[in-house]
Length: 191
Image (cartoon, rainbow, N blue to C red; front, side):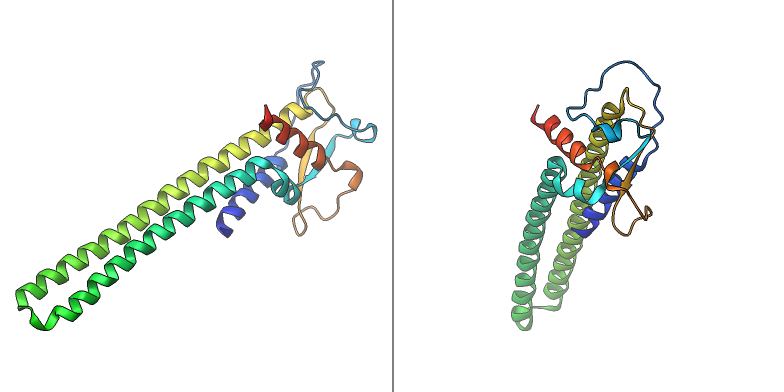
């Protein structure tokens, strides 16, 4: 699951680190949480991407969905591998009473089953990866869409993604909009 977390984390960082240049309009924001006074005139704000991922319901649901599917696929594959292993053990037990042609035929059958099992494993891994990419895109799109609405009509030029150990070395807490963004994103899901 580390790969999924890294991909989703990277996509979220990318989503919030994208520079938003806004065409100023007089329309009001669709964002449910307005900015405190000390943030209203700030052109650059940030959000903590680690906190966003931990608290964003869509991310958590997507992660759980993917983990559940992966666990089910792994259990299915393990069951199939165990069945093949039993067949190999049966073959080894019967080996002495078989003719050479029967042995060759059985080896070929077991080899094909093993190849089919490996091909199925690869196919399922590819399907899981495609589903992961789709979920990542949905999360990215929802965050980006929300941030566009959140910044609409405001003097916000950039929203930076901050995470400990990342490229932003210092971030003033007064510019942190993480809580407002998480609340807005999660409220959007309830609608």
